[in-house]
Structure formats: structure tokens, C-alpha cells
Image (cartoon, rainbow, N blue to C red; front, side, top):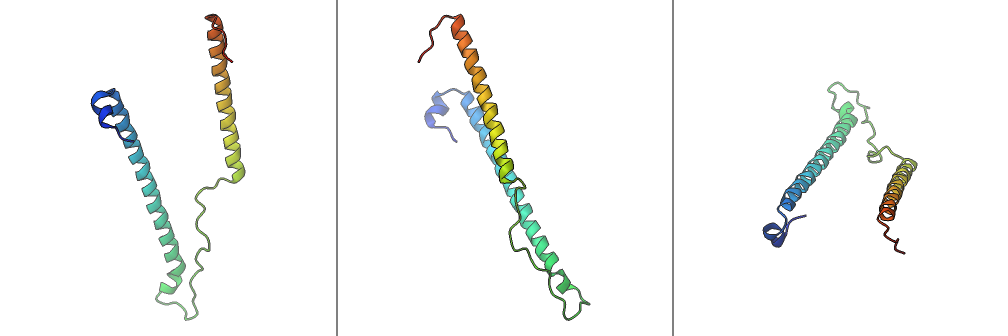
Amino acid sequence: MGMTYEQFWHGDPWIAKYVREAFKEAEKRKHEKDNYLCFLQGKYIYDALICVSPLLHAFRKSNTKPVPYHTEPYQLNDKTEKENSEKEEREMLKMKATFESLAVRINTTMAKKKIPPTE
């Protein structure tokens, strides 16, 4: 997200600080992603070299064959679908409890100020 001309020159000066922080955070996430992709590429290359290494041995037998390479890509996340759904359920319950406590606080504040509830 960037800033418009109007926001930069006529808006709140603190917006620039938060935009700069958001930009730095986005750059950090991009760097971490790129770093992980390079690591993963290195892992694939390493495994490919391990698979062909029997053929690279100088004194190998004539019937030596390479180790079979992976038939599927690496599993990037070890979490199962069930674990993901359980995590989502816990997060939903936590958000529900937060909103309920917020509603109770608002209602008690309104009751103290004798403001009738809206329907």
C-alpha cells in the first residue's frame, strides 16, 4: 500500500510512518519467502545429486544404477486437514468469546449511561 499525494502532503504525518513500517514488513516477508524457496531448490538439487552419486563413483561396477528420484514433491506443511480445521475452530471460539465480552462491556456502559439499546 502506498500513500496518495493528498495523504502525503495534507494528511496525518503519522500515516507515512505506518506505511513505511508496513513496507519494511512486506519486504521482510518477501525476503523470508525467497530465502525458503532457495533453500528448497538446494534441497532438490542435493537429493538429485545423491540419487546419481552411485554412477559418479570412479570404481563402480558396470551394472550400477542410480537411486530412484522422488516421484512426488516434498510435503511443505506437515499439518493434516484435521489439525488445520481444529486450529480454525479454536480461533473462531476465541474470536466469539472476545466479541461476546466486548458486547457485555458495551451493554454495561450503555446501561450506566442510561442509553436505550438499539434494535
